Image 1 (cartoon, rainbow, N blue to C red):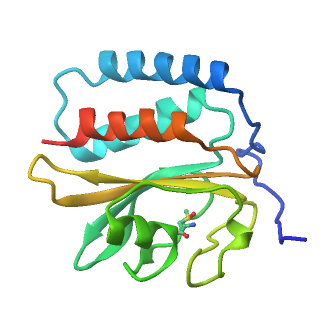
Image 2: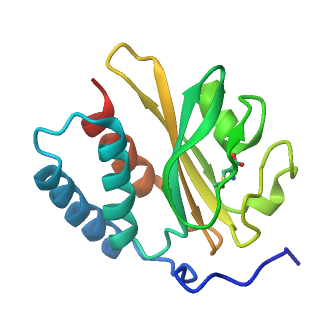
Length: 173
Ligand code: SME
């Protein structure tokens, strides 16, 4: 049995979505992002807006946000959810692994990983996770984008495809 904690009043438990519904939600989010972010160049503004629009449409997004590469480690950037860890070393967690390997990480059950090493539990309600690396045009790693769900196996290849496209389209420059 995994640990859990009472959710604050502004957070709801995740609800998994089927492939068709998930694809439609990402298409809607992509349309809104394209309209809202037209001509915008400020990274903080773009990151905050990506978090908000995706979390609005995808009901299994429990925690969503960015960890930015700063002084050789990952430091929390714009996010929505319960309190995130402030700093993550490249050697630790799913975020560190995505940064090290420069590849998207999909984890169906975070409790199957070694806690503190392979996975860092910022919120005990997290059950599954996707972490997508964010690159600039020169292929330098800028950040990782992290989404946690309070349900197991919320993320799949559909999430990977849309999220990699969104990071590339709105943040690579
Ligand atoms: N679970 C992540 C840490 C960040 S929180 O989920 C917000 C990890 O293992 O890297």
